[in-house]
Length: 115
Image 1: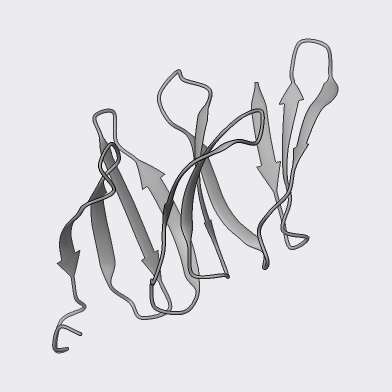
Image 2: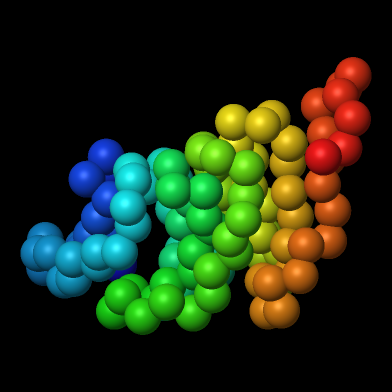
């Protein structure tokens, strides 16, 4: 499986062996800025300009949404364990527990105060 995204607010999943699109997943209101499969699962973590980090399965079902993030989220990644890490326009790096959605840490850029 391969997943792709773009400015149209859509995530596409692809069957790489057959070379065919498998699913068109919609629901983002702004461009999807980053995505990553979580380990060898069928779960994708995504970031977008709509200030949300989402976990969806490759069929399109939303598993978790992390909301109320400052403005535009530019990047997201998943650790081999249960961590989700994202950064955005506010230049802070945020870390969550993937299972609970609980925020574990916020790393502010040098010389700034926490929100």
